[in-house]
Structures are given as C-alpha cells and as structure tokens.
Length: 432
View 1: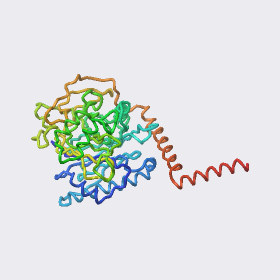
View 2: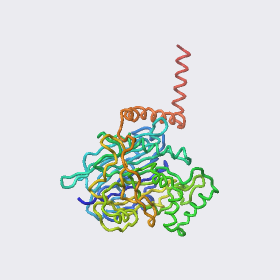
View 3: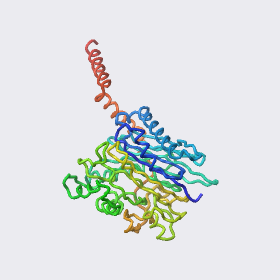
C-alpha cells in the first residue's frame, strides 16, 4: 500500500494516420520494465477538426488508438502473467484520454470530465479527464488524470490565453462529484500539448532560435545544455517561478530536446516556429516531507533511494524516434505514494497556496524549493452553474456549427448536399 507505479504518455498526433508498426517499435521501448499499476495515454489532434466535431466518428479513431496501446503493452509484457484491461476512454473534439491497467479490481468509481475553451467554447482547445479510485486493503485514494490542448502561437497575449485556458479547465472540468481538477484525497496529473513556447516573437535568424537549433545535433548536446536552455527560454518554467501557472504542481527534470515543431517524418525542426517544449507532464507536488534532501532527490536523481511518503520519478523523456507528427511524444514513469498530497483547493472551493517540497528547478545542480507566500487566493476552482451551461450546451452547439461548416465547405459530399439544399430552397420559393 506504500507506492503506486504509474506511466503517463502524451502525444499530439498532428491529425496524421499513425503507422502502427513503426509506432509500436519505438513506443514499447519507453515502457518501464516492471509492470505499472496504471497506464494513461493522452492524445491531441488524433483526428481532423471536422471528425472531432462528431462523437461517433471521433470515437472510432479513439478505439483504434486503444487497440494500438493494448497491442504495445502486450508486446512489452508478453512474458508476464498479466492481461491488460481498458478501464476508461473519453474524448471531446480531437482531445482524448485512455486508461489501461493489468489490475482492474484495484480500480473503481470511474468518473469522466471534459472542458472546451476553443473558439466559442468549442472543443478545438480544452481538456478531458478521468478520476478513478485506487483501493488496496480496504483503503482508497483517488487518481485524477487530465489531458489538454491549450491555445497556440507565440506572443504575450497567447501566453496569457494559455494561462487563462488552464484556470478555465481546472475549474470547469466537472467530474460530477462537486470538484473540478483539484480534489482533496487525490493525486493529480496534468499533461498534453500545453503549447508553451520559447519566444514571444519568433524570427528565424534570432539568437534564441539559433541557440535552440543547436539541439538539432544530439551528438553534441549535453543534458546540462538542455536544462540551461529550459531555464533561459521556456515560458512554462518562467511562469511557474513567477507563480502565474501550476501553483502546487511540479515537473521532473527536462533533459530532452524541444518536442515541437518538426518537419513531418523527419527529426529536423521546422523553420516556421521556434523549437519549444510544448508537450509536458506535471503532477501535484504538495506532499509531506520531513527532510529537504529527499525532496531534492525526487526531481534531480532518477535512481534516488526509496521514500515512501514522496513520489519517485524514474524517467521523464521524449521519444524522438517517432516521427509521424510535427510533435514528439513525451512520457513519464514514476511511483507515487499511497498517501495523497495535501489539498490545494479549500473546502469553500478556492485555490490555496501550500509550500511544496518538490524542487521547481529543471536543473539538477540548482534546486530551489517553493518558498513563496502561502495561503488562500481568490481563484475559485469548483465547477459553477455557468460552467455547466457552457460545457453542456454552448460547447455542443459550437462543435456542431464548426463540424457542419467544415463538412459543407470542404468535402465533396458536403458541397453537393449544400447545392441540393440551395436548389430545393430556390424551387420552393419559385413555385409556391
């Protein structure tokens, strides 16, 4: 009951059809050697915007990805006496999440949530989540997993929009238990194409771009170089230091190259964008800790000694050999304690700032801890009636409007139907 091994994976598929054989060869290498208790897969742009606007169509894509992940798990752990079971699958638009486990009897009370924050509150941007109860020896703890796709592009306005997207998602993603993303007695993970960039104004010949493009040749790159560039340029890292975003959350050391934007089917960065760490996985970090050294070991040493009251990061990395999108997948293998972190949402629903014993630095040599002012904030984090109306009715209408608009304007059948409707309308008015 002291530890729960988990594996998380996020991938922006770029609306591309995945070559299963090529994908599985590289995906299986990222899986931990020991069987985890739960595997959670987040997908963004797993189908086109039009297909994502219609649930039955997009669901077929999700079922194909579920089969793909099940096949990969079976290949990796075929020598183990385990069978894998999908315990959760949910999606809005082209954003999806899948949970698979070899131990389905350990999990119960599965809940889903979805929140759109795209144009007109559509599902073009937003997040999906699942919350499940993990039970051992008549004791239980919740696990909350969220996969999102935030606003794109460089610029200060876009950065602030991403921050606003996060607040909206964390409040309005309703699991039907009175809480949004944050809940007491729950471990919480947020992943996805968070879209944080490395420059506010991109130019191909800027010093920033040239320095980041040095990461193109992996044979010349050291992990310390990457960590220094994260600290120097990454918006999300800077925002966390200032307290703009992800209060109470931590991220393991980034020692992999930017995962966006690549020319498809190559490992060459696309010159239209500054290379950025868009694809990320973070976890709530307000765990109890008795000694600073154990907290430092959490994020800085992958082979840290066992501390049952703290999470242990085993590997946080990208999969640069998967080239079928303009993004590269990112995965996190870690072990979390059974005891959940201290809650950062108060009983009244407001975000509260707690000290974190998990270092906020990405660098292994310059760790700092969250010593900011703690206490309650005025940021409300429980779903409201307004959120219910927006996510139940407005999002549905916006998705259908976008979906049918694209169908009638971009497809051959759609244009034919539109012509027939116009002719029928003309004939009705002409002959009546």
